[in-house]
Image 1 (tube, rainbow, N blue to C red):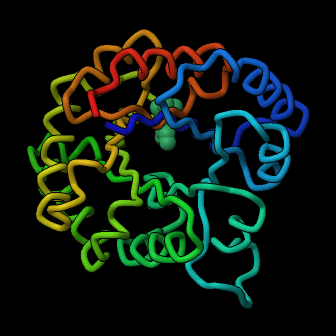
Image 2 (cartoon, rainbow, N blue to C red; image 1 turned 180 degrees about the horizontal axis):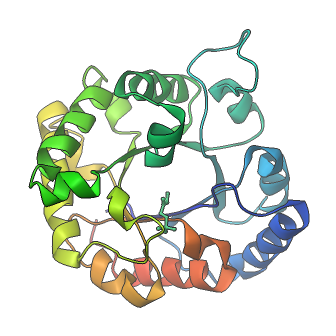
Length: 256
Ligand code: 13P
């Protein structure tokens, strides 16, 4: 089974700090265990730099966002084609911070997934419920609706190219991760939804856990049969912690 560790740097690191982190990752690349797909997602100004510095390393570069249009008068935005032309291999779509602070809707997320796929790069599609949703017991309903809105209508061959990340909003940056049981339960639920949309492809789609995932809790979280790695925020800003997460994901990798 594919196993993925992706680091979302969010709006962190200036140029020299980004270079330092990329340097550490590039240096350690030779010792990374094979069989885990590794991505790092720096901010836009450092994407080309990251592609350059990680050339030859088994670490691909992802973006954190893109616009759905091919080009045009969208001041401040970046298209998927621009990312691809810089050597970027994946793009995070639908992160809860985009939904919360920038008004990203499920419809926009759907359009962006299509835009990303159309240029041959991998969408890392994020879903996850708010604390209030979980407290009210409607977390599956909320995540099910997100998955439905974002992915319905994508052909099977497009679904096969997807990476999904379950990130409960209450666990992001809070130090309060989901329990391994909560993560596995939701991942199995998401797998079921994927099966309904793409029966042939669903078993092969990696579903990552995100939300205060760090070396101390990763082995337990990644043990779930439907947990195929992690989307890492805070812990991806430290090369040692991030590389340790790759090693843990490798240990917990499910058989092909
Ligand atoms: P933290 O790992 O900092 O909780 O962030 C998770 C996340 O949002 C990754 O996209």
